[in-house]
Length: 312
Image (tube, rainbow, N blue to C red; front, side, top):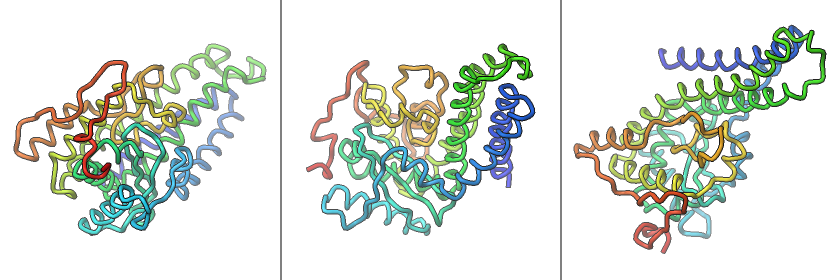
């Protein structure tokens, strides 16, 4: 009950931000339009949560019959993990991107989808990939996916509305805040939306890490995967789809943004080393760095040993 109340309050805050931006830009009329748009976006996000984000990333569905053994094994493992956790089997999607990463979406466990970048399958070993997908299944089981997707939709709309403020062709006297109000909303609204995303995402990532460790029975595998994914993301391997849709960054297991722009000013994820430390506590061992080394400004090379049996 407490989790549902927190979710309601956070989504209400996002909606209020959007409506407030509409008021400062267009007065009472702008507020009414923004309110209607917010209600419509929430409704559309609820019924089409999975389709919205998956379409953004050009994801395509895969299953155990895929001719590529790497991909077929990936889909089979996701379904086996779901079966072992006594969960409905989610749809499994693949994104054609080199940066290793993954996310889950959908309005409830019965209508869920999990997606992974092709780079995840190529750069992690099978045990680590199972750990990552168990984390995503934990998001599904915890019903985080609807909140994360609706938040991404509204946060993106707030940023678009803030950009639109500079080109609004109306009389400044009709705007409650005047030109200063427009400038304020253009600067502060995206920051406020990012802060709400942080509040939603950071708490949920720790919960999904613990849940994923339970589902896979292997917290060390998830810890190793997190270190490798973080190293590649920070090593210059850019996720171009995520850079075009920064409002969705909180949905991924590791922040996919390169950090080259202001969109990455606030992190939506806990520090990887803190997550690893918590997972190693669950494993009963001291934290150790087992992932690929970080290299500033360049992509981290992938050795055959790092690729594991799926890439052979």
